Image 1: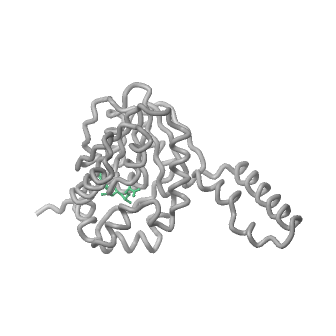
Image 2: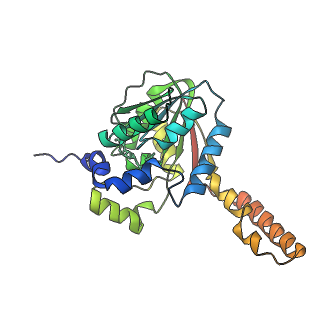
Length: 251
Ligand SMILES: C[S@@+](CC[C@H](N)C(=O)[O-])C[C@H]1O[C@@H](n2cnc3c(N)ncnc32)[C@H](O)[C@@H]1O
């Protein structure tokens, strides 16, 4: 019998237990990457036109980001291959009385979105694709003319981390490297005509908003620390490190 390469993705949420689901539903606050996630949200809200707009989130998991977007007033469809994840997402949206978010269990590599969305978002999800080309083709087809895809993915080296190896061995999920250069190359094949790559939103935040300021012993020490942070931020901007980064792809 042929093995379904996506079965691990379908089953993942049924293996993580109640604690895993609680963690997933509580994102961004339950996660060590909370500052990164919140920085992503600020970037998304800054990049996108204000509501009302239609958004589809590909690989939404239990839906924390889709629900945040809905709370801002966007009309959101969250899709995920995991029936379990979608069940939890629906229950959470209902408990929060969110009226503008819907969740559907489906494979984003065969999603038929009928050219009606202003934005399609992949947050930490495209690197789980069996075929990122099929996923981006579906995202392209789901966008209204002028719409765009926004991706935030772990970049080069992700597949070799200990956490990724562990996830692949234990859950048979995909943990690919998904640097912006690869996303853009595949996006061209999928039909996208224009792109931009920006540094990950947290890259700048973490340099400028630092806990180390609290250790300043005098005003001049505080000023010195701030000067150093500004200098590091400018240097970082000049280096323009965009892996991992945020990619925008226009239809
Ligand atoms: C690392 S999780 C990220 C979930 C969520 N976006 C977040 O930021 O917490 C990757 C998600 O992609 C989903 N996924 C993997 N392959 C998929 C596919 N072919 N179609 C739809 N969803 C998929 C998984 O079920 C999982 O929820």
